[in-house]
Image (cartoon, rainbow over all chains, first blue to last red; front, side, top):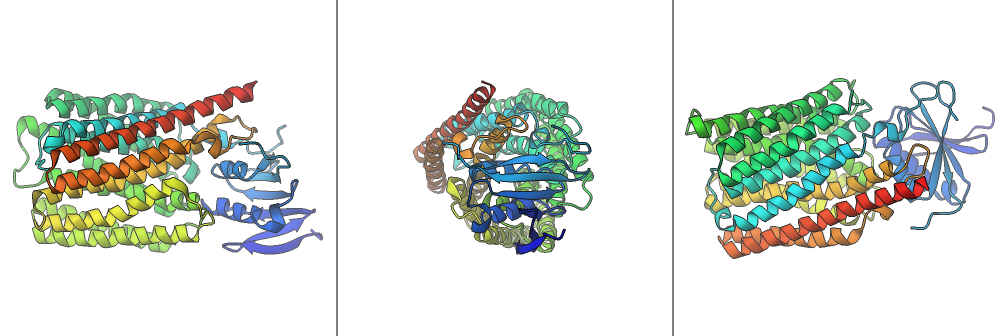
Amino acid sequence: MSDCVDLPPVSGGIPVWIEGGRVHIDVRGLEPPGPLVAILELIERPETGDAPGKTVDVRLHRDPVFLYPELTERGWSWERLPASEGEVRLRLVKDSDAREI
Amino acid sequence: MKFPGEILLGAQSQLLPPSVPYRFFMAAVVFHAASWATIIFAADEVADFNGGPGLVPAAVHALTLGVFAMTVMGALFQLLPVATGRMLRAVWPCKLVSWLYIPGVALLVYGFAIGHHHFMAAGAILTILAFLVFGFLMADVLSRTKGEMKLLVLHGWGALAALLGLTALGIAMIANQEHGFLPADVNFRLAHMIIATFGFMGMLVVGYSQILIPIFALAQAPDEGRGVKAFVLFAAVLGLTLGAVFTGNGALLTFAAAAGVGVAGFHVWTMIQVVRRGMRKNLGLSFVLIKTAWTLLPISLALGVLASTGFLGDRGAVLFIFLSLYGWLLTFLLGVLQRIIPFLAAMNASKEGQTPPRLSELAEERPLKVHAVCHFTALALISYGIVFAHELVIMAGGLAGLSGALAYLWFMLGVLRRMKNFQAREKT
């Protein structure tokens, strides 16, 4: 992981880093609503989520049910990445065309 | 595309079929209207109500069983497994609960309204059976948690213990109407009200607030250690209050009620700190209701302290009960429900892998504004009507409450209609 660069953590000291040109956050082990708050705080940082196409890779230990409507509301979509048992990996992508309300 | 070893567990697979939570929510919204409508017809009995069957207990049970417990069932079946990560083992018991509970409450409320013992007994049996299945399902989920979500789980067990006591007392009180075996010098109605309102519902409200309020406000959860101490204090005060009621110790009851104001104040203070720390600053109309409920909780308990001293007379006790049930609990639950209904609709509207609709696409603000205005008007008018024993004012309050309830029904039907429309659009 030679290209791994640490970024300032989000509230609660949750580590955030850049790896392979993508922002990463690991919220495994946090109880609700910790993962939701940490991820939303990260994508609302101007340096993370302003431009369309920006991505954040997230590692969780549980499917973040409460997160999805919040992502949609903020114009982010997500895709599932392969993950080992007991883990959920998501790639969050800032949409280029926000859906009309 | 599926990957080897991938957890095939999407958000949708953690969700029950939408018909399960929504049948409870829809029934709750209908009983909400029924409760206010019954108050209109019971307006002459409300201010000086002093027990026994009739329209006033019918209105109260339409609210407590029909709205509060109904909402709790719909919400817990869905949210407890999501929050704890422990799934229900099967969906059919949830449907069984609804088949027993919804007609059971209707029969019980009808029995209270017409003063018919057999309707009450039949409704009580169905309601109790539903509570037993519900309690078993919740206990099963709670028992599978391994130290996670400690506050939620502790309050969940507390609520289940209260439900058990409440059910036993309810059976005894209905049987007592026919057979008269309970000691006459114990105020069982007050004990029943305290266990139901502050035991069962209070535990659930405090426990679930630890997770729902931070989710709504986008804030970190409150400190767990302090929450555990508050839970112990809360349980102790409840026990003390019930001890005072069963022993008929007025001084102890006043002391316990005063301690209850302190415990409630601490809960409200904790929640306000959560909201202040939250990332979401525009909390919307739901938080107008929730914050009003937080204000009314200590106020209603303080009225309970004064009522326990006899300082306010019999109407003080009625006002305490009205503000606890319709002021604090109903206002809080309706505030929470208006957030949960569109959220679940958003998640149920889309299939796995599809983008759900925005919450703002599903929830219409206008009926909620109408509801809020009518609800607050109803609270003010009926409180005034109770204090001054003014039948027409209470009737007007009931009408305002009914109008608000119909607006809430309009909101709910609107969300469901938009969810169906979205699903139909996604299919084409």
